[in-house]
Length: 178
Image 1 (cartoon, rainbow, N blue to C red):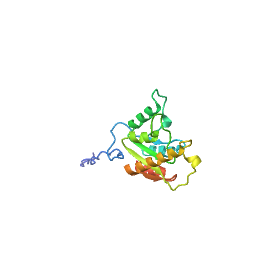
Image 2: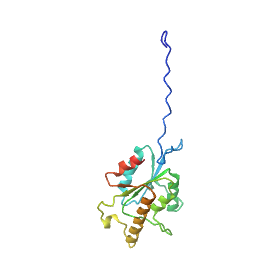
Image 3: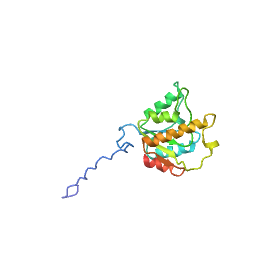
Image 4: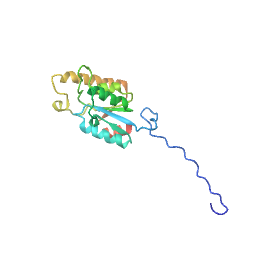
């Protein structure tokens, strides 16, 4: 207060919204937004690190198989439980179909896709060079897995808008999508 002048109030500022989720709604107030990363591991190890950095940049919590602890449940049960507890699944699909759990017909990556309520999917650009002996699944069921992988990619493309990526664009594409 100064002599003869009333102190003027600053106008009230509206509350700042929290970051919206991919579905356009706001996440529940208390918990950090959890993002599960799904992919085969051997061909996507470096890509998973790129995606992890993008998730952290977006202020969200990354969840991946790299941080799983010992568990008494079957691997597939524990994994799918992590997917269901996450707010979002980010899927990276490249050249491998991956591990098919005993008694299942689908890979763990496709099972994770099925279990997720919200998904952002990133498919490797099919025009990129591929080295079959390095990039494809190995073993006697190699070609059967390639057929399943193509069917999975086709399904993903039918069910939602997936983003094609290459090594340079993946991190920015994920960050932009989040």
